[in-house]
Length: 270
Image (tube, rainbow, N blue to C red; front, top):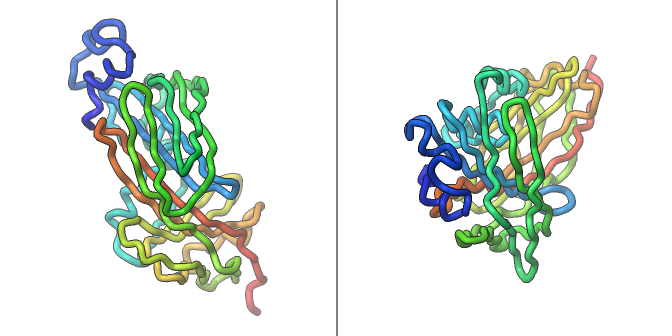
C-alpha cells in the first residue's frame, strides 16, 4: 500500500506521537483504505473503511472487518467451484484477543454520479478488536455510468460501474442434480465474474462460488449442493461482476454489480 504517513498528515489526522506513528516501529504499522460499492435491489450501497493496525497482514485485517476478498476469483481456473463456510473463514483469520484495529476518520467522503452527490455518513463502530468509524451511504444505481469518489483535502477518483446483473429466471433445485443458472451475459472482459449459491444449514451459512465465463449460463455441480434443499430459509443464487482499482493514495476500490434470486426447490425424483 502507498497510503502512508504523508497521506495521513494530509487527512489532518496528525503526525508523530499524537497518532502513535513515531512510537512504534515503522515496519509493524500498516494502514488499509477500502471502498466497496455494491449494487443492491434499491440502489447502490457504498461502505468505506480506513484502518490502522499493528503486526498483522492486510488480508487478515480485511477478513476481520468483513471486507470482500476476491483473490480466489482472480486466480481460479475457469468453471471451477469453491465451497465456503464464512464462519470458519472468520475464525481462521486471527485470534481476536491478539488483534487491535483503529478505524480512522478521514473527513467528508462523497459519491457523485450524473448530477447527484451523496455524502457518506461516518458511523461509530466499536468491536472487541476494532474501534472508530466506518463510512456508509446509498445512492442511485446507474449501470456502466461513471461514479466519482470525492475525499475532502485529498482529491477525487473516477470509476465506471459494471453492467447491470440480471438473472433470467429463478433457478430450480432438484436434490442430486446440477443447478442451472441463467443470466443476461456481458461483453465486458475487464471484470471478475462468478456464480454464487447460498443457504443456511444447522444455523450456519454455506456458500458455493463458481468462477466461470460471463456467457449466460452455468450448471453448479449438484454434488456441492447436497444439503441446500434442507435450508431453513430459501436458498439463493446470484451472479456477481466485480471491478477492482486502486486510487493514487493506495486505497483499494471494489465496484460490484450483483443480481440474485430465490431458488425454487423441487422434490428429488423417485
